[in-house]
Length: 628
Image (cartoon, rainbow, N blue to C red; front, side, top):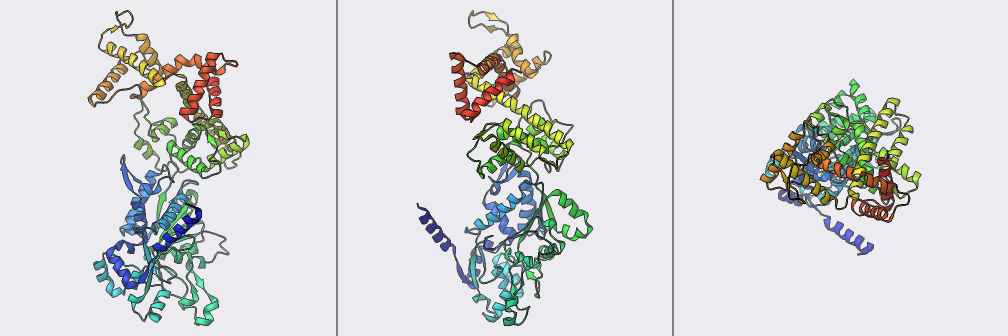
C-alpha cells in the first residue's frame, strides 16, 4: 500500500471513531458500559490492565511497560498495586500527588511518557473511549450535568460515581443556550492528545520571576472584557492552563520540586478536594492524575523544609532505582542504541554485557554476606554454587540499593565516543571499557576516592570478560564441543559410579577388569577445587543428583550440574590450551593450523554473533591471555 493510501486509510479510521450526540444519548451509552464514566485514576489502571497482567515466579508483571522499562519489576509492581490500583478503587491514595523519586536516567521520564502515550492510544479504543461536553474548554465529564439531588439515585441505577461540578463555561451555556434542559446538551467523544492539549498536560519550571500562575490555572482575556463587561464572566476568561487542559487525564509536573511553592500550593486543593481556584470563579472541578519526578538530593532538601509539610503529606513517593540485573541493563543499552544513529554499528558479543557488569557493580552496596561479583550474579538469577546466601536477604539489607551509581546514558555516551574515536563500524568490550575509563577523567564531579573505586570495578568487569571470551574461544576450538564434553562426562561418570560402588570397570581394549581411573577423576575435580578429602562427598553428590533426575524421568547431562559443567569445560580447555596458544600466535601458520583457525573464525561468526573484524580481534586477544 502506498503512503498516500495509508494516510487516506488512517483518515477514514479516525473519522469512524468520531461520535456526537445529546446528553440523553450519552446516558444510554453509560447504561451499556459504565466504565466510560470512570475517573482518571481508574481509566489509567484499566489501560495498564488491558495490556495484560501476568504472575511469574511470585512477581506480578505488567506488560504495558514491556520493551521500554527493564529491571524495574519490583518498583512497577509497587507503583501499580499501591497507587494505580488503589486509586482506581477510590481509596484515599487517589487524593495524592504521585512523586517518582530516583537517580538520573533511571526511567522516571520514560515511565511518564509511556503513561501519556498510552492514554492517547487507549482513548482511541472501544474499551478506553472517553466522552466530554462539546465546547467545554476542560472536556469535562457529562455526568456533571446531573443535579446534586438526583445523583445518589443515578449512581445506584447506573453503577457509577459522580464527582465534580460544571465548569463556569458549561454552567453559563446550560442556563443561556439550553434553558437548563440538561438532556439537550451536546456530548462528543474526545481523544487524548498532548499535542492538542486534550487530557494530557505538562508543566515545567522556568524563571520564578517571569513564570505566571496563569500557566497552571488560565487567565483573563482582557480583549473581551469590554464585550462581556466583567472579569467574572466565563466568556472573558481563558481556561487554557495546564490544570484545565489535563482534566480527565494526566498532568506531568516536570522537576516539580524546582517549581516555586506558590505554584505547588494550587495542587493541595486539586489533590485533596478535586478542585482548584482560578480567576473570580468558584472552585473549579478537575479530575486528573498529577505525576511528578525528581532526584533524591532535591527530595531530601524539600522534605527538610518545614514549610513544605502540607504538600509533602499530599504526596505518594515511589522510588525508581537503577536496575540491579545485568541482563536487564543490557536490554536498556540495546534499546538506546536502536533509537540512535548507531543502530547499524556492530557491537561484539560481551560488549554490552561487560559494560553492564561495570554499571551494576557501581550501584551495589558492599555486603559481609557476599562479595560484589557473587551478589551481582545472584541478583541476575544465576546459580552460584557454594553460596547459600538468600537473594531476598541481600536485597533487604539495603532497601534503597540502586539509587546511585553509573547511569545508562553515561555508558551510551562513552560507546558513542569510542566509535567516533576509532572511526569503526565494530566495537568490542575492550573498546567500551577503555572509553568508560577515559570518561572518568572528564567527570569533574567524581572525587578521587570514587574514581579509584570505579577503576577497580572496571578491572573486575575486565576479568569477567577475559573469562567469558576464553570459554567462548575454547568452545569454538573444540570440534563438536557438545559431543566432546558429553564423552568426557560419560567417562567420568562411569569411573565415579564404579568408585562409589567399589566395583571395577571393563577395559574396552583389553577386556580386562581395571580399577576406576583416579587420575581422570581428579583431573576433572581439580578444575573446580575439589580437595582430596572432599572428593568422595562430591562423587556421592553427583550420584544422588543422577538418581533424582532418573526418578523424575529426566536425562542427566554434563551441564545439569553447575559445578560439574564448569569442571568439564575447564578440563577440555586445559587439554586444548597449548593448541590454542600455538594456533592463535603463529605468525606463519602451517596448513593444519590455518585450517583450524578458519574453522574457529567461522564458528565465532556463524554461532556466536561475531563479525569478521571482531572475530579476528578476539582470537588474538585470547592468544595473548594464554601467553601471560
